Amino acid sequence: MSASPALEVLVDADNVFPVRLQPVLDLVGVQRLSYRILAAGQQRALDRLRWPTGTELRPAAGWQQADVVLASGYSPGRGPLLLITGDGDFGLLAARHPGPVLVVSGSPSGRLREAVAVLDPAVEGLAPVQDWLTAVGSVPPPPLYTPRLMLRARQAPDSAAFDELFADPEMLRQVADGGPISHSAEEHAKSQDRDIRMQQQLGFSLFTVVRRSDERVLGFTGLAPWPGSDEIEIGWRYRRQFWGAGYASEAARAALGYGLSVVGLPRIISVGYSDNTASLRVMAKIGMHREAEIELHGRTAYRYAIGASANQRSGARLPT
Image (cartoon, rainbow, N blue to C red):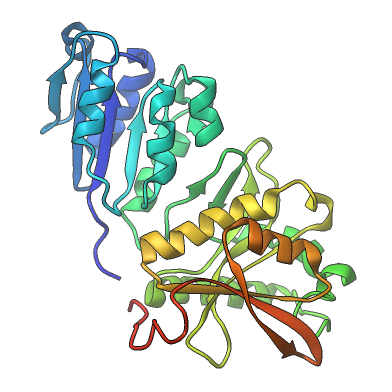
């Protein structure tokens, strides 16, 4: 993969208390990242803070003038976006940004929280911000945040949750040929190594899905090559106790956006058995359409897709 693109930071200085904002700015300033910081607000708000070198400060007096300045100065590239604001008007901007996004706020409106996941450093500490800033400068993907979930690279401690997942016969019935799947310590290590290599070589892999409220591992979702073809599939598996809560579609939507926008894949498929109505429903909810009926391990299955058709994507190459 190519070097990580520059981090873009938009700061609404009028809407976040300095005690919350200053530690985040200091953290950005010491990261080994290429960044662009644009800050807007009343002059007295700008003067109360220590800004990292190179920050572009734009005084903006009057109701919503800072919003206008930041919106007009926003560069909607595929690079990571750190948005520091308390204003719900920026919720949709963050939600549609094509790259990784982290929103930091100390006084978020309800509309902001409805649109995107928000971190408050005064409540949750700087660790989530530190982790995200470190990740966007490295080869592994930074965690993806949704209102309820965090999607991150697989870690060794996740194995206990996956042991439970792959011991569930009902889940196994919907996976491949339905046979048992080895979940020894050696197999867990191989899977983690495979994900690392896939991420380095192709720019995508599987994410562990973690519930933000209690840090419980729910399952996994993400992208992988479909065996024997040049298709890329999005898939998911969840522990049964977390079925029916909308987690699968919430996480899959984030992973799908990562594949289409950040990796730049022209097409992504998903395959499910015809009687797996819950999974087929997720495919439809995230914007995929049913493309074909196929046979898989002697059973009827449906292939869903989003993006270019097989003919339109001829000559397309995966990132290396």
